[in-house]
Image (cartoon, rainbow, N blue to C red):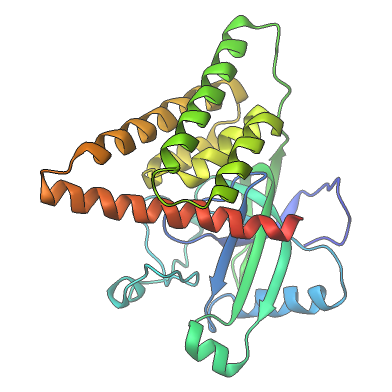
Length: 285
């Protein structure tokens, strides 16, 4: 944790996992709901620091695909069966890459709120920079690690391939926004997405769109671990194009009830992700 205002230099951070199929990317905002008995010592230390008004920086690391844990980060889709899994106590369960994050909102619930929400703390985090997990230096009562920050590299606009990929990505982003307009996404959210297409650095833009589309856990981890901006944009372009195609095809599947139900479920999940992104952006305004 740090009390230094940006730009921030850090080589060691306390680590919190981001839950199942949740990956925080630089420039993206993510909300985590922390249960009462998980990461208690870390949360209390962070809360004390929060009360002083100081900036808090924490390392967010996803789990290796296939690993399970006592999901300290609850969400609306978590079932009782999913909650009955074992918390990892082995550092080997941590993915090798993560994102240093700034705490932009921190809420500590009272006993009644804990009973209703199943969360003792609610953290809203903004990704700052990717890092490589170099060495776990502490495992009890919470993880701490030495990290290797990886700042975003400048892109070469003299590279014709890079210019073409950027143009293709922005076009795909507009196509995505157009498809979203058929899924009951609020107009204000679509306006925000289109504004991001015009104003956001392309590496961060790729991370933003990847954070809201429907991906497998493996794909999310691959994007996190991809440091080269050109390669990441190319990967994100393929994933975004696939999402647009899936949404267009699912809209036409009106005769097959089973497929239509599946598509509606995916569309509902997508609306939650996009609307959630929009709601969380208010902490940055």
